[in-house]
Length: 294
Image 1 (cartoon, rainbow, N blue to C red):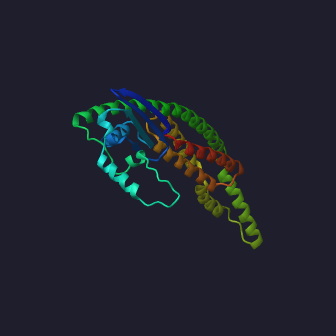
Image 2 (cartoon, rainbow, N blue to C red; image 1 turned 180 degrees about the vertical axis):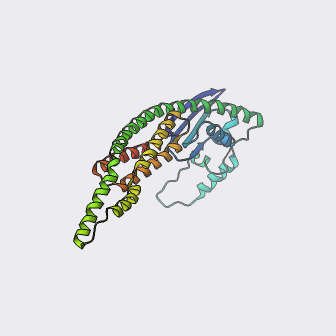
Image 3 (cartoon, rainbow, N blue to C red; image 1 turned 120 degrees about the horizontal axis):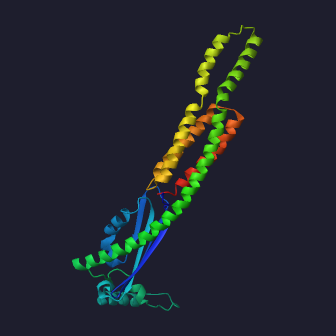
């Protein structure tokens, strides 16, 4: 079954005195793009996290955010008190306009460069963190993929319904197709007869038939009808096949539109033109909807 590219998943875990909260969100995108937001002590794991996510998601704009709370000295880091004092001294001696009472916010100063020093984790500590991140990531991805799957079922049902209605319009066009050549023949014959009558020329039925045979080949829409049937078959097959078919479906809808436009250009029969307009509207809807599919 096809999957949507829109989804959300979260995971929560307490490990010792650390509390982890992970959220993964995904939106539509032509390609795969991920933004990873980590606490500073986990920055080393960014490349591994991207690999974890890429293994299970093929397309979409993904936002991966993890927050960690706790009092573990391994992640809290330390404050460079001498650097902090230097900032305070410089700010205290700074000149301010009369009437303004200066105040020093230590929280703001602590965010300045060189104040807080994040400790380096050892190899064993990094392995422990990667194990926790792997479990959290897969738990959140399970939830996100399930949401994508549920939305994919709804999208698939809608696509197949619209595709069936587009096929109905194609069936109407196929019924009218034999009249395309005949309509061109009668119209051309009438024009030629009028021209010959006005000019006093002799009417040559055999030559007219030869010219109309050439015209018939140009205005015949049976080939386009056959290709449209094949493309609709492919479209439905991909929908039922699922598993990262978004790009394939997008290509097929482009081909459907191309064939429909060719039919529109080849004939002026009102009933066919009306069905082509209806069918193109449905194909446009298919094209818009498949942009949501992984």
